[in-house]
Amino acid sequence: MGAIKDGVVSEKGSALKKYQSAIVGSSSLSLLVRYECTQLFLTRLPGALGLLLRQKLTRGLLGSCGRKPALGTDVVFRHPKRIRLGDTVVIDDGCCFDAYTDGDVGISVGDRCMFGRGTRLSSKQGKITIGSDCGFGAGITIHSALEGEVSIGNKCIFAGHAYIGGGQYYMDRTDIPIVDQGHRSGLRLVMGDNCWVGANATIVNGVTIGRDAVVAAGAVVTKDVPDFAVVAGVPAKVIRMRSPAEVKEQAVVIG
Image 1: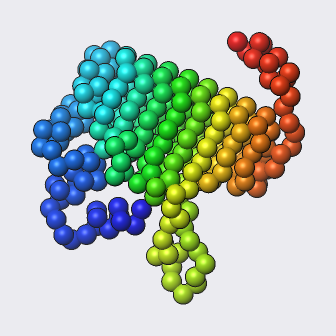
Image 2: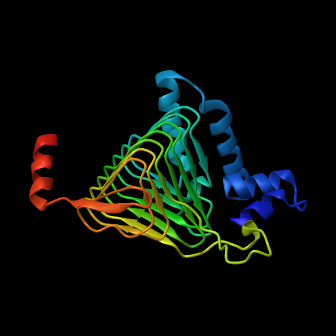
Image 3: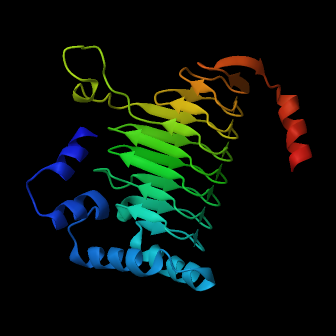
């Protein structure tokens, strides 16, 4: 993260080169022109016409994009060639997908996922992988950093303003500011299938959330969560276990 900031605020290099590096992710002039045209003319175009034009132009802008994406207004893609979207992905107004990474793919989203207004996916030298049929409420942040990964399974749901992942600074020394001590690298957050994360919950990087687990609203998860567990509190603790029979019964009622 420090290297990203240093590159942007450095006095070396032109403003255009910094913009291409930090936002577009390529020195290609043709990609810059296409990116600028998308941002300038289409991001705020209202109604069905705007939806259709964003669908057509964005498919060629991204690394790959499946059938029939639905993109709201003011959606921002940074480093678009490192973003992969599956079929029929829905992205509401004001979302930001930032795939700043040295790898070929920074953000990968499966089929039929929906992202609520103002949600932000940020891969800062890491990777974010999301399965299919996931739903994200408004104002959610998913952050992977420094050779790490946030991996989310299929059919997971997230209520509004949850925070998933994030960077972690070293803070052992007191003779220099924390911001100058550097980030931990290689942290991996893994979430199994069918999980439910409540509103304003926080799941820190480096933990594993088992399949069919439930994270209560406002919980702060700092340790691994077993399969079928319900966790709550700060820090989060297991308050009960869901039985497979209960899961099956709920699936029948809901679906």
